[in-house]
Length: 111
Length: 112
Image (cartoon, rainbow over all chains, first blue to last red; front, top):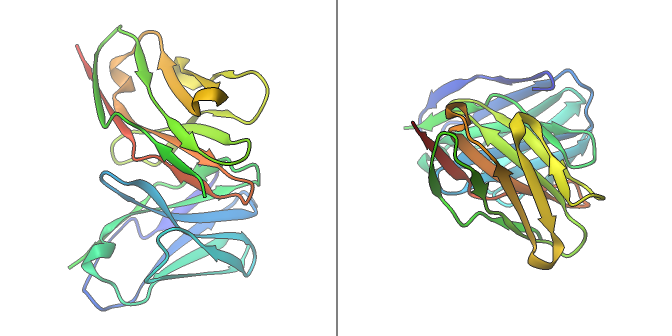
């Protein structure tokens, strides 16, 4: 898993609350990604980062923000959680040839 | 923008039989292509990748895939499946701006 740790692994939160998911890597990979996985949709890119403080939107970025203040950490924040954001979230890292290494995932339930 | 289509949502195959999973992609330039496998409750593991060169690529666990530019396809094959191959398989295409786009996945069930 290229030394990728996601925390928490499971979380239940209430609608309207902010939630932050953390991804920590020990491989010094430049690129980091956040995906969500939903049945029938595969993995969809939320945001990605191509360096410290350099981030860009993916295909499903509405309602999410990210921050990367150091190489090893990439945070995903749900500004005001909604039930439609119930999903499994995966962090991935990459070295620049687009190959990605995945964490174990975070299961988020918004009630 | 790139996209990936996996036409088969679910495939059931007998243990020892051959397996082929289909993948079609859309991308304007030379694609980077990948197959990942996900076991229940786990993250994604890379099976194989194609960047350039030989269009038939070998991966882990006895899998191979063939890139056909004329058909915009990157189908995954295994000559003889094992019960442990039951999982969900994802095809992905990478772009020059380092984004990786995934198909919806194919679930493989292996029957004894």
